[in-house]
Length: 114
Image (cartoon, rainbow, N blue to C red; front, side):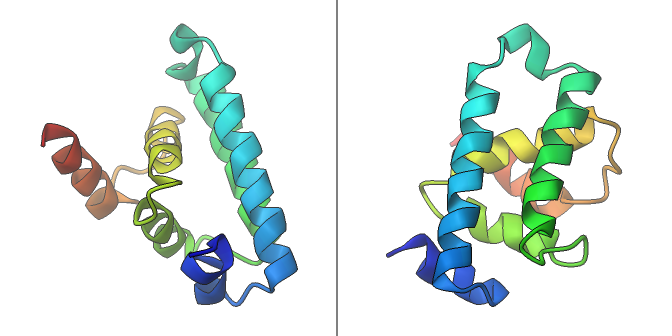
């Protein structure tokens, strides 16, 4: 199943928008993976990383009202599950409200224990 079918269609994205968003997510994931491990847990890095994520999704009309649904969808895909495990903790490390993404975060913790 393509990214457009798995994720894009649920957020009313065209095929072209889906391709562009997916490319942006890949770049974001690579940036996280290339960062030094002692840097990724700092509030400064986490803030920049989450801000880049926000800018990316906002460009495609995904706003704060549906970002959690978007991350839920991404987490449900095998390809982007790892990326979500970078995004949510980055949000928290940057000082984000712990109530936001709480259900998804609990699911992530539960999945890690298996």
